[in-house]
Length: 457
Image 1 (tube, one colour):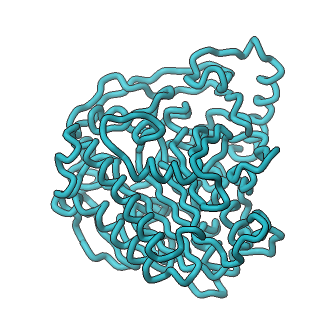
Image 2: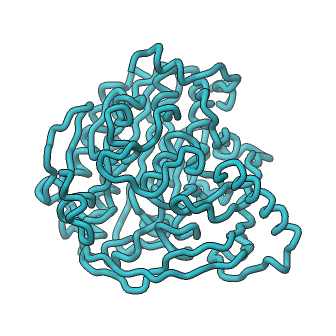
């Protein structure tokens, strides 16, 4: 995309680097976003105590802040990724659910984080699973990324899909590098290399671009099923394939953070580590875990609440934990603020939450509410401070029978009535307190009605 075209996405903004502490270096910060696929909140130390080691993720948390109330607005692949990269609700962009091969994806009228930072002089790269467009003008090279490599959609959308092989066999799963197909048909022999390939490209990018401000986005394909792991980690955990996969992802985190240190840019780089949604629990021993209600594909916290770590030496206090709520929608405007970049011309639903992220005294979340949805169905809101959550009446799926060793499980459908949950005292969303706190229910219902009117009518 030509430079002048990128600028067409942008407008003048008063946001700048004022959020940095006094005396901070003036060079624009780098950004690294490690975005996992279907990783559960409880899949890593120190969020929980899984029976396999994740020392690099634990070290990252020890060097930064662990956020325990971080959310995505929809707990499904494409919708979640689109929200992260655009800062817009799925109800605005109409990117719902998980898009298949050759799908349109995120309309180019919505700028991505790549567009925003590229327009501010950043070098940008994405290595991993894209999944917000598989057409010429919606793939990474046309969406603000100078370098790219990986899959255009989920690694199960291939001829070996456990439930719909006929549908996906029409389109071979392809591996792309910088806008060109380099593997025309990804096979079971290729998939064990995905985590390694993404990591090697990320490390190489850091080494080559250390003198430039850069954005590095690493959306891993794993631990989305089907699970694959390299020979180096196969059987390493002694706890099964899923644990092996998680150990390899942890290794990847370590390689990327070591590369930042070796390149001398560690202290001027913000690293964000999180997942697109909760675990796909119907896959049983090939899925992660969450302590919260339900999982991927629902509006309950088991689907929308993801583990999150932010490391930014000298700006975010090391070894800290924050229960303050924020969302992937806020990443684009917050990064733009730190980079001194202009916001897009198109509307952005996220807000700059830098003061909240850095733990500034008295910082409050600027959102009155966050909305959550599943597919095209708007399901409710939670307060910007994360204390209250309102479910509108809606249906949702519950795992009825788990699969094993890569086989899909089975679901049943249930319904929830209009419900208010006190998330501070009941994070499992188990007790409806609608009648106990009618004034809170009325306030959140007003937010929900306004959100539906603006995005769903």
